[in-house]
Length: 278
Image 1 (tube, rainbow, N blue to C red):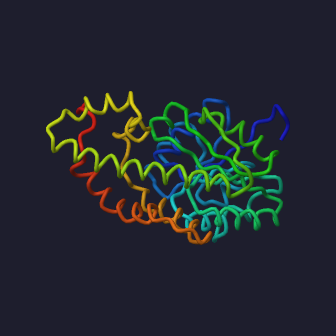
Image 2: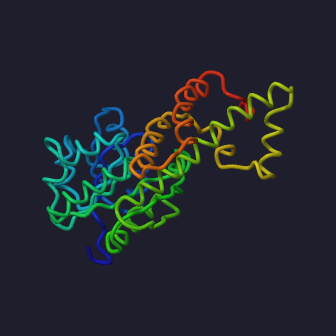
Image 3: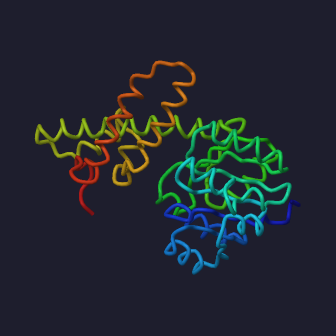
């Protein structure tokens, strides 16, 4: 790409996070081709002005920079390598940015196969929640070659206010896994701390305000209303895989991996009321 020519961007997976990404890309003058298995998601981005593709391959044929926002490792592999997959349709010089949260091994294996076709992988998971996506203030964690990262900065800069280049392909996913490990450790702690504090009759939102001025402050406490634990078990499985491959004892990781199963139910049904109802 030249310095003045904009990438033709494709996005596969335009759910709650992908939709604001499409919005910001279009606002900054990019053409966007989208694909999703949800007709409702497709309708929303079509209304924004995105072109719609029936398959991943059609996205690849129309794009030179494709962002993946699907949920699981198996889905990433399917849309890239499967029938009507992305990789076979992309031209040499194209980039696949994996913004899904997956195992580092998954993106490294894709990188090997993509390079054989003259295509590069940008390891590019994103952090912060849906409200940050709406405002174009996500954090992108990049792993990849410097020239690939530079192309990625222009595209991701439309919806990410912060971009960190952590190293090679795979290191972006390592960073995301460690971020999420710390998030879920803290969030489990907030359930326990909230339950204990509530038993004393203290006003929990007042306690939250105080903690946010103290060493108990955390992003998890600040964003408590956004936390759902929906992806927590998958995140912890990725962390456990990394630690197992390294032969490292990780007792806290193991405990949190089990605790997030129940935490999802608690957060959805009867969580500590750290914030007042709006």
